[in-house]
Length: 315
Image (cartoon, rainbow, N blue to C red; front, top):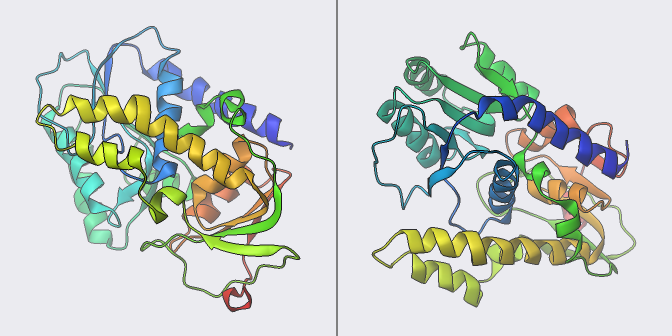
């Protein structure tokens, strides 16, 4: 399947399954106020999807800007998607559980997440809390995550692609740069890095990088840091929504578009490459997130390949 058809297919799946569930005004919680462009792409996709609904967003917040508010029982709570459902990035899972316990009478939808637990006892504890809520829907973004949760929940577990596929590809392509004769090996620098050896065959110059927003701090990023120190917390949300997020997403598009070849250990470099129709190779992370997403949604995509037998020392 070519890039255009794949993007249309995945976007269609999201709309078909998620659209009927959001039938009232809503809040969007746990949006990312940090420097990972991948999470910002998810947020942008969520907002792009929600713009097509005839309902109003009453409130939005990050973990740091959240304050408990009394919500009408009819208000739907949407929780930001991503790859932090489990015990690797515990702060986000704890926040979700807090919201689930704080709003027992509201419909809650967790947008598409990768699920991974190192500790099964922690999984069972989380399941006990989540199962107590009478109207919780959890969207998973790969078949393994779906299987983990369906083993413990009787219903309301969905399988959906990443929300970034709701972003307008036309909008992203406005920021493309001409490709140069060089290869990008994008290596994440956090605890999700797969430490096996990699081999990248290429005749071009290889540059080992991470997202530019993670490598360096520019004035726009400093602006977000300053806005988070202002007593009125909504300033940070406004700044992130209207200035920070679009700036860094456009920066990400310009960054990856300038390479002739791309090898990535970050899932959203693969997703962004798919959105802008750029050939690339994806390498698994430390616990199977990238492979599971590839096997679920991208296995039949022309121009994308999963790399499994690699030797990093040859770079």
